[in-house]
Image 1: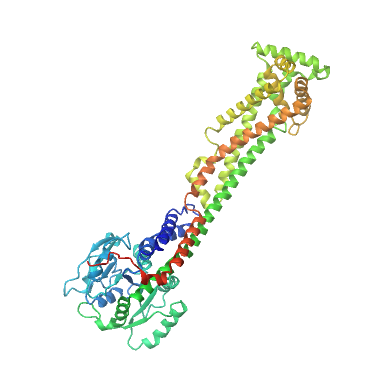
Image 2 (image 1 turned 135 degrees about the vertical axis):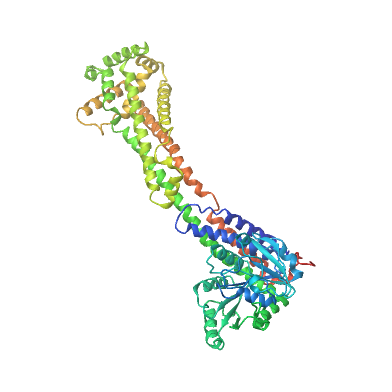
Length: 599
């Protein structure tokens, strides 16, 4: 192997790994087709590109392909001079691919150097007198995965023939195998008939051959005597239109077969001479191999671009859906924040319990007298006598918990609804049905978050009770009383209250604030309230972020696989490596020995 080949092979292997792990798992438009395109690209790398890049001087592989009933097997048998493949009127006749090679080339094809997905079986030349309708083994589904190797002295050295299944077979497996064999070929002997040469399926394949710069010869079979002058110009013009203007066309007139179902040897003189001349000319073989290799890699690059675009579409969908998830859970956090601003958490029982504790009628009797009463109430609470402040704290905790859990369920439902708007989203939703509601442990985590916030408020008050005088006032009022007062101040805006609730909540908040200002001072109270609100918002946001990770994790599984950038980068590197080693001219200097020595 020449010096530049290892780098190209390394690039090829990296690209193959990315195509194998392409990750087109979401059912977006075109994803299934591109998954198959990636799998087909991997097969062509294994079947053709890697072995041909490894050794440009290996024997050429000529695949005889064509439509149902075009006479491929009959032509292969005529080229060899004896029935080697089954021919007949029952379709499909060719199911097991048969590779016929010169005996000296047996070593090239016995290994899995090419077509590694097909098991090798050794065939035998049919006994003299065997009709073509009985040649070869009886076709079975199992033999679709086998490549029969048959050595015959009539095959020229350095070139092998493969009789492929019908390209338009009624059997899906036959069509897939025919396409695989044609993709693994250095050159095609394409067989059609005077009646079917304009069919769409053959020309679609020939377009692919032109795109890959495959060397093609066309056999126009079963041409009625005297009709060649009319049909041949049309075929030639169509080849020109499809980028195959240089392809030779060999005409075989319709004629009776002999008693063994064989064409006379002279009927295939044209294609036999063409194949023999190529096999005998090493420079021409190298040119054909290099052109086909270059064309295959260029075509692979074009396919990789489409595959990479499909991969980008998958990742873009994941990104957009992640934004939906983030938006819904951020909205949930904002809704909780709004609920703690508009006074809604102080409705009903919370207001009543707070009113019982502080007594708004004392508001205008002087804060010092009210402070004394609060101190007495706190002392009673410390002595474990039931006091309304405990109920106030509990009611606020329950109200805040209900809001958080409700918003968690709303966000989950919104994400679920968003997933239902696309096939990809529905697939993820079907795989993860629990995403439609809040997670089973969410309520407990919400309760823990509130308790942690309340604990942080206690610590915040303690940390800000710096002087002996402030500490004494905190102890006199009671740490829990001061904490609840701070919660009331944080939650008591009047935006969500109406009527008498406004007066009660507003007055209650003022009393709580006056208590805190008496202890800490006016500026400190504003700072404490701002810190408390920010801390609550941070904790709630973190709670919802954690809850959203269920949906995020489900989405992120679709990211597993190659990136579009790596696919394009690796394909470009392979093309660059081929340009550096000058594939077209390098083959003449190939020093690869290969396994094709004496058999």
